[in-house]
Image (cartoon, rainbow, N blue to C red; front, side, top):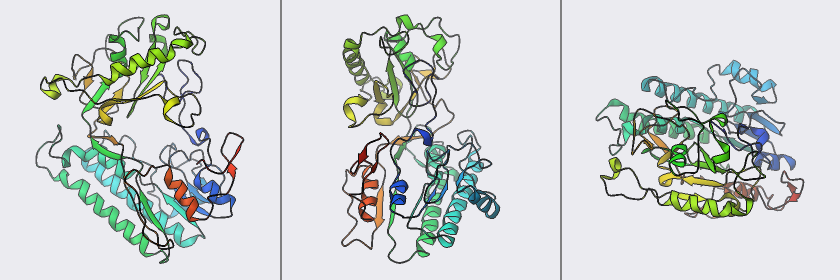
Length: 411
């Protein structure tokens, strides 16, 4: 795999995990803390390594394990692990576990995390609390195809079909118990950072780039393997891709990459060509019964799409089939492929029944604000932080945005 996340520089093998150090903007609890408000933060991604804040923080799923320094302040770790010895950041290898064991671990992890939240809400002074429960995500990946009778992997009637609705009932009960202990004037907001949908399969993006003349290898692999920098003939390569829920494609630009061949003035022409081909891709005949329907891919140029682009973004981002297809980065012959070897029916990370979707949920009870909590249908997830700032009367408070400049609007 060439790039695990955003690259540290435009070379060919600078892997970078998106830790808390990669976050350049202040978190909402940083903004609240600067006004003297205390926060309780549990399980939020990209909070490891932990950083100083006004309140208590327990790191999210990207922390390696619970044995390390996962809390702020550090003394909280012994308290939590002593009272809740089964506390888990995540479920390792959740795609590979037997389904019955996975269901049990998800339920236990969720119960424990809510118990920790209630303990801290009861024993600490706080103004704002935020918890992310990763169990729902793991549940969808592991059990969607048992529950969805239209899924291509649906095995027929099975007791595992009840795992998803039973877990939702568990979540409802844990939320009810938590809200019941709060003062009546507490604002409660429930937000998901993404939705879920059945996964159709994977598109082998680097194989597609090879067959379309954008990527050249020094030798053809004899079996499937991850694409690495030493496999690529960079003097004959214009683009390569990375896997994930969406595809990330990087161009080999002269003067930017070490062995770049695309003149900078031709960069936009090449990615326009790529975008056109990607958007015209059709689903394999095994899926469409030979009708040749387009996948419905969406291609984004980050520097044109987002108002602010930091770091070293890919040249193109591709949502395959509106996220119904996952981007896979491996190259070489692989068993189980179809559509001329360009597609797979499984995730390269292991068995998987669901992919992410663009739209999640947002609902809440805001008794301290006159009127109802009206969330428009196109509410953007970035507006959640803006709402929180307004709720605490901090909409015009200035703070550093991570670039060295004062900023009173961006979040």
